[in-house]
View 1 (cartoon, protein in one colour):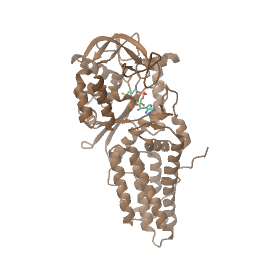
View 2 (view 1 turned 180 degrees about the vertical axis):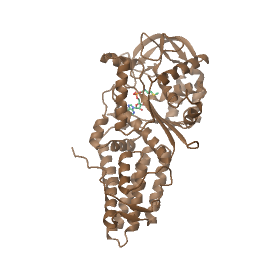
View 3 (view 1 turned 120 degrees about the horizontal axis):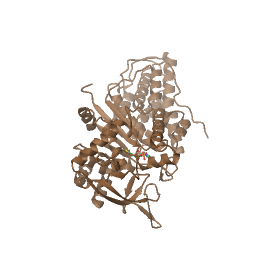
Length: 503
Ligand code: ME8
């Protein structure tokens, strides 16, 4: 394993103030698909997700319910785990910011930042959104009837004036701009440009990183002044270091960090660039290898969110499409980094019916039943080179998309193979051929390749299909060629996707 390639994948750690919804599933499933893709290629993958458990937002939510914050986050983080398990999310660690190793890392890092002279005392005055856990400047908030509102949640901001400690982000303005403008970290690039222009326009201000305990008691005590707790965003960002073992095994940490791919929604772009890149620089660490940013899932143009009250439930999705794999597939198909994506049952139904039932599912059913009918399931190698060439070109294209983390295109390309193969069968009519072996073998190989390509997206259903074909899923790129299997012994002809009950 010494020479194995490594990859470190992270999702945001979510506020466990309520159960996760489709918006949280969007990021987590995309990150899981990329983890599973690298795993399929034979990489050593460490996949981190978890919950962000401190701060005013969680403290208030617990108070509202009349329970202690710890009891509340214990209950809610378990619910997040349950949902990720329902959705087949195979994380390596579920980190909680109340975990002992994380709290101790936060204290160590804050002491270090203080010793390095990056921290100073001061007073902060500003408008705060508890739902976002951040201040908004005059340029950022929206004013209605003379009242400042949060630009994301459209709720009135709270005015806060308090003693605090600041982190000297302003010193890192040029460094952050360099990473944004010259590096290839932020993907897609439009987001790098967005943050760079904001910094150029408004500057990079020092960040208030402490909260007086009278206001926010639910947090990690500031190690050099116990009247304060650490600002929840600093606590939260550092989870990525705890998860990679920064305070345990420096060498392993470096290997992981060099190969890190971080997934976030665009709402937390500023924290994951301006704040995060500065914080990493203060610790003499490079930025992550990739920061993949996606748009919002919206309902009538509004960001789906608990505070807005327009969430799509993960349970409803699983119920409607019959399996978590189908939900994962829909998420993969609609994945959009550049733009927001409007939630639509009409579009989701048509993806399910068109891609899964009529295209991929139908192909699997047709070819396996022909193999059983014509050959008793035993089909030896006989390649139809014309179709094989077309399939292999599409496989290469899908692999390239995956390697660029372009999941939606990778999936669409895999579905193109199924589509081409259905058309190929219609053209060749193997049931009328004298020697149908090359057609059936090549069609079986096409199914195997589509199934492999979709394995990261639908781990269970693809595994079942491979079982019907009597084929093991291996690790590595060798298996991605037509002709890899010398003999098929098809066991059964499955119907992997049931038609939607029409409402
Ligand atoms: O911000 N569309 O947690 P959070 C797309 N704890 N993605 C969405 C979404 C939507 N409508 N709603 C949520 C926090 N998400 C902090 C993060 S990380 C160090 C700390 C996803 O519970 C998306 O990934 O508000 C977004 O960035 C994240 O959930 C915000 O989750």
